[in-house]
Image (cartoon, rainbow, N blue to C red; front, top):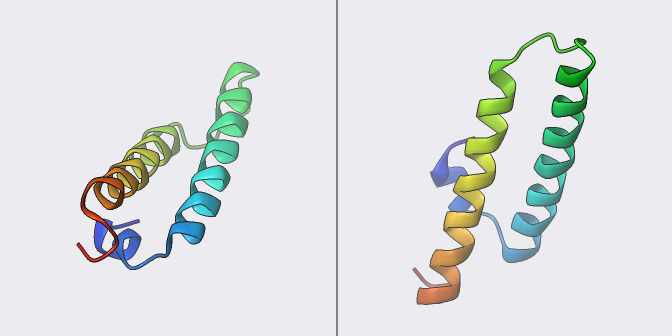
Length: 67
């Protein structure tokens, strides 16, 4: 997911996507713990997407929705 795509989302969509990604990360970590994980690089991708969303949310918080 690209930052430009994230910036186009509304605040509610960002919250929803963040919850989905956190849930996916939990499931991936669980799969890794029981050695059922097919693509270990997906964990890194999900973590970066979470960080991107949190960064955009913080930017909106500091500068308002019009930035």
